[in-house]
Image (cartoon, rainbow, N blue to C red; front, side, top):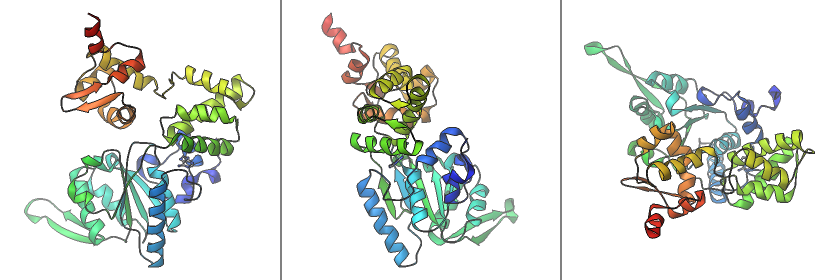
Amino acid sequence: MIEEENNPIKSVGSVVGAQAGTDEATVFENKLRPKDFDSYIGQGEVKQNLSVFVRAARKRSETLDHTIFYGPPGLGKTTLSMILASEMGTELRITSGPALEKPGDLASILSNLKEGDFLFIDEIHRLRMPVEEILYTAMEDFAIDLVIGKGPSARTMRINVPRFTLVGATTLMSRLSNPLRDRFGHVEKLRYYEPDEIQSIIVRSAEILDIAIDEGAAKLLAKSARATPRIANRLLRRMRDFAEILHEGVITEKVVREGLASLSVDKNGLDFADQEYLRTICEKFSGGPVGLSTISAAIGEDEHTIEDMIEPFLIREGFLTRTPRGRQVTDRGFQHLGLASADDQLRLV
Ligand code: ADE
Protein backbone atom coordinates (compact mmCIF):
# COMPACT_ATOMS: atom_id res chain seq x y z
CA MET A 1 0.00 0.00 0.00
CA ILE A 2 1.43 3.39 -1.02
CA GLU A 3 1.09 6.16 1.54
CA GLU A 4 -1.04 9.11 0.51
CA GLU A 5 1.76 11.69 0.71
CA ASN A 6 3.98 9.57 -1.55
CA ASN A 7 1.39 9.51 -4.28
CA PRO A 8 2.73 11.99 -6.87
CA ILE A 9 -0.69 12.40 -8.45
CA LYS A 10 -1.36 14.82 -5.58
CA SER A 11 1.56 17.03 -6.50
CA VAL A 12 0.11 17.67 -9.94
CA GLY A 13 -3.24 18.75 -8.65
CA SER A 14 -6.67 17.36 -9.37
CA VAL A 15 -7.03 14.45 -11.66
CA VAL A 16 -10.28 13.72 -13.44
CA GLY A 17 -11.48 10.83 -15.56
CA ALA A 18 -9.82 7.68 -16.74
CA GLN A 19 -6.36 8.17 -15.24
CA ALA A 20 -7.35 9.07 -11.70
CA GLY A 21 -4.94 6.27 -10.81
CA THR A 22 -5.66 4.24 -7.70
CA ASP A 23 -4.84 0.75 -9.04
CA GLU A 24 -1.48 -0.72 -8.04
CA ALA A 25 0.15 -0.42 -11.48
CA THR A 26 -0.80 3.26 -11.85
CA VAL A 27 0.32 4.10 -8.33
CA PHE A 28 3.73 2.52 -9.01
CA GLU A 29 4.00 4.18 -12.40
CA ASN A 30 3.38 7.53 -10.74
CA LYS A 31 5.92 6.84 -8.03
CA LEU A 32 8.61 6.14 -10.65
CA ARG A 33 7.84 9.14 -12.85
CA PRO A 34 10.60 11.76 -12.96
CA LYS A 35 9.34 15.08 -11.59
CA ASP A 36 11.57 17.46 -13.54
CA PHE A 37 13.51 17.69 -16.81
CA ASP A 38 16.83 16.96 -15.05
CA SER A 39 15.75 13.55 -13.80
CA TYR A 40 13.98 12.66 -17.07
CA ILE A 41 16.14 10.26 -19.10
CA GLY A 42 15.95 10.26 -22.93
CA GLN A 43 13.94 12.27 -25.52
CA GLY A 44 16.83 14.78 -25.50
CA GLU A 45 15.63 17.04 -28.30
CA VAL A 46 12.02 17.18 -27.10
CA LYS A 47 13.17 17.97 -23.58
CA GLN A 48 15.52 20.69 -24.77
CA ASN A 49 12.81 22.36 -26.87
CA LEU A 50 10.20 22.16 -24.13
CA SER A 51 12.47 23.66 -21.52
CA VAL A 52 13.10 26.65 -23.83
CA PHE A 53 9.36 27.10 -24.48
CA VAL A 54 8.62 26.92 -20.74
CA ARG A 55 11.30 29.49 -19.91
CA ALA A 56 10.04 31.80 -22.69
CA ALA A 57 6.42 31.55 -21.53
CA ARG A 58 7.39 32.16 -17.92
CA LYS A 59 9.56 35.15 -18.86
CA ARG A 60 6.61 36.73 -20.66
CA SER A 61 4.15 35.66 -17.92
CA GLU A 62 2.11 33.85 -20.55
CA THR A 63 0.55 30.41 -20.62
CA LEU A 64 2.41 27.77 -22.62
CA ASP A 65 1.04 27.22 -26.15
CA HIS A 66 -1.18 24.17 -26.63
CA THR A 67 1.04 21.12 -27.05
CA ILE A 68 0.53 17.72 -28.61
CA PHE A 69 2.65 14.64 -27.92
CA TYR A 70 2.46 11.71 -30.26
CA GLY A 71 4.05 8.29 -30.40
CA PRO A 72 3.50 4.74 -29.14
CA PRO A 73 2.15 4.19 -25.62
CA GLY A 74 4.43 4.18 -22.58
CA LEU A 75 7.07 6.58 -23.93
CA GLY A 76 6.41 9.43 -21.52
CA LYS A 77 3.57 11.60 -22.84
CA THR A 78 1.85 11.87 -19.45
CA THR A 79 5.12 12.26 -17.56
CA LEU A 80 6.29 15.13 -19.78
CA SER A 81 2.90 16.83 -19.37
CA MET A 82 3.20 16.59 -15.59
CA ILE A 83 6.70 18.05 -15.78
CA LEU A 84 5.47 20.90 -18.00
CA ALA A 85 2.71 21.81 -15.54
CA SER A 86 5.10 21.61 -12.63
CA GLU A 87 7.75 23.75 -14.38
CA MET A 88 5.06 26.33 -15.18
CA GLY A 89 4.01 26.28 -11.52
CA THR A 90 0.44 25.21 -12.30
CA GLU A 91 -1.82 22.20 -11.97
CA LEU A 92 -2.57 19.42 -14.42
CA ARG A 93 -5.98 17.87 -14.86
CA ILE A 94 -6.15 14.60 -16.71
CA THR A 95 -8.89 13.11 -18.82
CA SER A 96 -9.14 11.12 -22.05
CA GLY A 97 -10.94 11.28 -25.40
CA PRO A 98 -13.21 8.29 -24.77
CA ALA A 99 -14.11 9.55 -21.24
CA LEU A 100 -15.60 12.75 -22.66
CA GLU A 101 -18.93 11.51 -23.95
CA LYS A 102 -20.88 14.75 -24.34
CA PRO A 103 -19.93 18.39 -25.04
CA GLY A 104 -21.21 19.15 -21.52
CA ASP A 105 -18.55 16.85 -20.00
CA LEU A 106 -15.78 18.92 -21.54
CA ALA A 107 -17.56 22.24 -20.92
CA SER A 108 -17.76 21.47 -17.22
CA ILE A 109 -14.05 20.56 -16.97
CA LEU A 110 -13.03 23.68 -18.90
CA SER A 111 -15.14 26.03 -16.82
CA ASN A 112 -13.70 24.57 -13.60
CA LEU A 113 -10.07 25.15 -14.62
CA LYS A 114 -8.05 27.88 -12.96
CA GLU A 115 -6.11 30.48 -14.94
CA GLY A 116 -2.93 28.85 -16.35
CA ASP A 117 -3.96 25.25 -15.60
CA PHE A 118 -3.01 22.41 -17.93
CA LEU A 119 -5.66 20.08 -19.31
CA PHE A 120 -4.28 16.75 -20.50
CA ILE A 121 -6.46 14.78 -22.92
CA ASP A 122 -5.11 11.29 -23.52
CA GLU A 123 -6.11 9.48 -26.74
CA ILE A 124 -7.26 12.80 -28.12
CA HIS A 125 -7.79 11.19 -31.53
CA ARG A 126 -10.79 9.36 -29.99
CA LEU A 127 -12.75 12.54 -29.14
CA ARG A 128 -16.27 12.55 -30.53
CA MET A 129 -16.86 15.32 -33.08
CA PRO A 130 -19.40 17.36 -31.01
CA VAL A 131 -16.92 17.34 -28.11
CA GLU A 132 -13.98 18.19 -30.38
CA GLU A 133 -15.87 21.18 -31.78
CA ILE A 134 -16.13 22.69 -28.28
CA LEU A 135 -12.34 22.58 -28.11
CA TYR A 136 -11.83 24.75 -31.20
CA THR A 137 -13.12 28.00 -29.64
CA ALA A 138 -11.83 27.01 -26.21
CA MET A 139 -8.28 26.66 -27.58
CA GLU A 140 -8.43 29.76 -29.74
CA ASP A 141 -10.62 32.26 -27.90
CA PHE A 142 -10.81 30.72 -24.40
CA ALA A 143 -14.58 30.62 -24.77
CA ILE A 144 -17.16 27.93 -25.38
CA ASP A 145 -20.41 28.17 -27.30
CA LEU A 146 -23.14 26.19 -25.61
CA VAL A 147 -26.45 25.46 -27.31
CA ILE A 148 -29.33 26.00 -24.88
CA GLY A 149 -32.69 24.40 -25.62
CA LYS A 150 -33.88 22.47 -28.65
CA GLY A 151 -35.63 23.15 -31.94
CA PRO A 152 -36.64 26.66 -33.09
CA SER A 153 -36.16 28.15 -29.62
CA ALA A 154 -32.54 26.90 -29.34
CA ARG A 155 -29.96 29.63 -28.84
CA THR A 156 -26.21 29.79 -28.37
CA MET A 157 -24.61 31.17 -25.28
CA ARG A 158 -20.91 32.07 -25.19
CA ILE A 159 -19.10 31.40 -21.89
CA ASN A 160 -15.54 32.47 -21.19
CA VAL A 161 -13.15 29.90 -19.75
CA PRO A 162 -9.84 30.60 -17.99
CA ARG A 163 -6.70 30.74 -20.16
CA PHE A 164 -5.32 27.22 -20.10
CA THR A 165 -2.85 25.00 -21.92
CA LEU A 166 -4.24 21.95 -23.63
CA VAL A 167 -1.88 19.00 -23.84
CA GLY A 168 -3.09 16.33 -26.24
CA ALA A 169 -1.61 12.86 -26.40
CA THR A 170 -2.11 10.45 -29.24
CA THR A 171 -0.69 7.23 -30.55
CA LEU A 172 -2.19 7.89 -33.98
CA MET A 173 -1.43 11.43 -35.19
CA SER A 174 -2.94 10.70 -38.61
CA ARG A 175 -6.37 10.25 -36.98
CA LEU A 176 -6.45 13.86 -35.78
CA SER A 177 -8.63 16.17 -37.81
CA ASN A 178 -6.87 19.09 -39.51
CA PRO A 179 -8.75 21.82 -37.57
CA LEU A 180 -7.67 20.26 -34.27
CA ARG A 181 -4.08 19.62 -35.34
CA ASP A 182 -3.70 23.19 -36.59
CA ARG A 183 -4.57 24.61 -33.17
CA PHE A 184 -1.51 23.17 -31.43
CA GLY A 185 1.49 25.50 -31.18
CA HIS A 186 3.92 22.71 -30.26
CA VAL A 187 3.92 19.28 -31.89
CA GLU A 188 6.37 16.83 -30.30
CA LYS A 189 7.04 13.29 -31.48
CA LEU A 190 8.26 10.85 -28.83
CA ARG A 191 10.63 8.14 -30.03
CA TYR A 192 11.50 4.69 -28.77
CA TYR A 193 14.39 4.81 -26.27
CA GLU A 194 17.97 3.63 -26.82
CA PRO A 195 19.02 0.49 -24.87
CA ASP A 196 21.41 2.50 -22.64
CA GLU A 197 18.63 4.97 -21.80
CA ILE A 198 16.29 2.14 -20.81
CA GLN A 199 19.09 0.63 -18.72
CA SER A 200 19.57 3.96 -16.90
CA ILE A 201 15.81 4.20 -16.29
CA ILE A 202 15.84 0.69 -14.81
CA VAL A 203 18.74 1.56 -12.50
CA ARG A 204 17.01 4.79 -11.39
CA SER A 205 13.71 2.98 -10.74
CA ALA A 206 15.45 0.15 -8.85
CA GLU A 207 16.93 2.78 -6.51
CA ILE A 208 13.49 4.29 -5.89
CA LEU A 209 12.01 0.82 -5.28
CA ASP A 210 14.96 0.01 -3.02
CA ILE A 211 15.93 -3.22 -4.80
CA ALA A 212 19.51 -4.17 -5.73
CA ILE A 213 20.13 -4.97 -9.40
CA ASP A 214 23.39 -6.12 -11.09
CA GLU A 215 24.65 -4.13 -14.06
CA GLY A 216 24.39 -7.21 -16.31
CA ALA A 217 20.84 -7.83 -15.13
CA ALA A 218 19.81 -4.23 -15.87
CA LYS A 219 21.33 -4.54 -19.34
CA LEU A 220 19.55 -7.82 -20.04
CA LEU A 221 16.22 -6.50 -18.77
CA ALA A 222 16.63 -3.36 -20.89
CA LYS A 223 16.88 -5.52 -24.03
CA SER A 224 13.49 -7.07 -23.28
CA ALA A 225 11.68 -3.83 -22.48
CA ARG A 226 10.65 -3.01 -26.04
CA ALA A 227 12.49 0.33 -25.87
CA THR A 228 9.65 1.57 -23.65
CA PRO A 229 10.05 2.94 -20.08
CA ARG A 230 6.59 1.79 -18.96
CA ILE A 231 7.41 -1.80 -19.94
CA ALA A 232 10.89 -1.55 -18.37
CA ASN A 233 9.39 -0.44 -15.06
CA ARG A 234 6.69 -3.10 -15.19
CA LEU A 235 9.23 -5.85 -15.83
CA LEU A 236 11.47 -4.46 -13.08
CA ARG A 237 8.62 -4.75 -10.57
CA ARG A 238 8.04 -8.37 -11.56
CA MET A 239 11.79 -9.14 -11.32
CA ARG A 240 11.73 -7.62 -7.84
CA ASP A 241 8.95 -10.08 -6.91
CA PHE A 242 10.96 -13.03 -8.25
CA ALA A 243 14.17 -11.81 -6.55
CA GLU A 244 12.51 -11.27 -3.16
CA ILE A 245 10.48 -14.48 -3.07
CA LEU A 246 12.45 -17.05 -5.07
CA HIS A 247 16.02 -15.72 -4.78
CA GLU A 248 18.22 -13.73 -2.38
CA GLY A 249 16.63 -10.32 -2.87
CA VAL A 250 19.03 -9.16 -5.59
CA ILE A 251 18.08 -8.97 -9.27
CA THR A 252 20.84 -10.89 -11.04
CA GLU A 253 21.10 -12.03 -14.68
CA LYS A 254 19.83 -15.45 -13.57
CA VAL A 255 16.75 -13.87 -11.96
CA VAL A 256 16.05 -11.89 -15.14
CA ARG A 257 16.52 -14.91 -17.42
CA GLU A 258 14.24 -17.12 -15.33
CA GLY A 259 11.77 -14.33 -14.64
CA LEU A 260 11.34 -13.40 -18.30
CA ALA A 261 10.83 -17.07 -19.19
CA SER A 262 8.14 -17.35 -16.49
CA LEU A 263 6.39 -14.30 -17.95
CA SER A 264 6.66 -15.71 -21.51
CA VAL A 265 8.65 -12.66 -22.60
CA ASP A 266 11.08 -13.63 -25.37
CA LYS A 267 14.57 -12.25 -26.06
CA ASN A 268 13.20 -9.39 -28.18
CA GLY A 269 10.72 -8.44 -25.47
CA LEU A 270 7.64 -9.85 -27.23
CA ASP A 271 5.08 -10.97 -24.68
CA PHE A 272 2.34 -13.56 -25.01
CA ALA A 273 -0.07 -11.16 -26.77
CA ASP A 274 2.56 -10.12 -29.36
CA GLN A 275 3.56 -13.71 -30.03
CA GLU A 276 -0.07 -14.82 -30.33
CA TYR A 277 -0.78 -11.98 -32.77
CA LEU A 278 2.18 -12.87 -35.03
CA ARG A 279 1.56 -16.60 -34.78
CA THR A 280 -2.13 -16.21 -35.71
CA ILE A 281 -1.31 -14.25 -38.88
CA CYS A 282 1.35 -16.81 -39.83
CA GLU A 283 -0.59 -19.96 -39.06
CA LYS A 284 -4.18 -19.01 -39.86
CA PHE A 285 -3.67 -16.49 -42.68
CA SER A 286 -0.42 -17.70 -44.30
CA GLY A 287 1.39 -14.62 -43.03
CA GLY A 288 -1.14 -12.17 -44.53
CA PRO A 289 -2.04 -9.70 -45.86
CA VAL A 290 -5.05 -9.82 -43.58
CA GLY A 291 -7.35 -7.05 -42.33
CA LEU A 292 -7.26 -5.67 -38.80
CA SER A 293 -10.88 -6.62 -38.03
CA THR A 294 -10.23 -10.23 -39.07
CA ILE A 295 -7.18 -10.49 -36.80
CA SER A 296 -9.14 -8.83 -34.00
CA ALA A 297 -11.88 -11.48 -34.30
CA ALA A 298 -9.35 -14.32 -34.55
CA ILE A 299 -7.46 -13.45 -31.36
CA GLY A 300 -10.32 -11.81 -29.46
CA GLU A 301 -8.42 -8.56 -28.96
CA ASP A 302 -9.85 -5.07 -29.39
CA GLU A 303 -8.75 -3.28 -32.61
CA HIS A 304 -7.54 -0.21 -30.68
CA THR A 305 -5.36 -2.38 -28.46
CA ILE A 306 -3.87 -4.10 -31.50
CA GLU A 307 -3.15 -0.82 -33.29
CA ASP A 308 -1.88 1.05 -30.23
CA MET A 309 -0.16 -1.56 -28.10
CA ILE A 310 0.86 -4.49 -30.26
CA GLU A 311 1.64 -3.36 -33.80
CA PRO A 312 3.95 -0.32 -33.41
CA PHE A 313 6.83 -2.27 -31.87
CA LEU A 314 6.42 -5.24 -34.23
CA ILE A 315 6.63 -2.83 -37.17
CA ARG A 316 9.67 -1.10 -35.70
CA GLU A 317 11.42 -4.45 -35.21
CA GLY A 318 10.70 -5.42 -38.82
CA PHE A 319 8.42 -8.34 -37.90
CA LEU A 320 5.33 -6.83 -39.49
CA THR A 321 4.33 -4.46 -42.29
CA ARG A 322 1.07 -2.63 -42.93
CA THR A 323 0.07 -2.82 -46.60
CA PRO A 324 -3.02 -1.38 -48.33
CA ARG A 325 -4.42 -4.96 -48.32
CA GLY A 326 -3.80 -5.58 -44.63
CA ARG A 327 -1.17 -6.70 -42.16
CA GLN A 328 1.68 -8.94 -43.33
CA VAL A 329 4.30 -10.80 -41.31
CA THR A 330 7.81 -10.36 -42.76
CA ASP A 331 10.39 -13.12 -43.28
CA ARG A 332 12.07 -11.81 -40.15
CA GLY A 333 8.80 -12.27 -38.26
CA PHE A 334 8.51 -15.87 -39.45
CA GLN A 335 12.15 -16.53 -38.48
CA HIS A 336 11.59 -15.05 -35.05
CA LEU A 337 8.80 -17.55 -34.40
CA GLY A 338 10.87 -20.39 -35.85
CA LEU A 339 8.32 -20.87 -38.64
CA ALA A 340 8.78 -21.23 -42.41
CA SER A 341 7.21 -18.41 -44.46
CA ALA A 342 4.97 -19.18 -47.46
CA ASP A 343 7.93 -18.32 -49.75
CA ASP A 344 10.20 -20.68 -47.83
CA GLN A 345 7.62 -23.46 -48.13
CA LEU A 346 7.40 -22.95 -51.90
CA ARG A 347 11.19 -23.12 -52.15
CA LEU A 348 11.14 -26.43 -50.28
CA VAL A 349 8.64 -28.05 -52.67
N1 ADE B 1 10.59 6.43 -15.57
C1 ADE B 1 9.73 6.36 -16.59
N2 ADE B 1 10.17 7.09 -17.62
C2 ADE B 1 11.33 7.68 -17.24
C3 ADE B 1 12.25 8.55 -17.87
N3 ADE B 1 12.08 8.97 -19.13
N4 ADE B 1 13.32 8.94 -17.17
C4 ADE B 1 13.51 8.49 -15.93
N5 ADE B 1 12.69 7.67 -15.28
C5 ADE B 1 11.59 7.25 -15.94
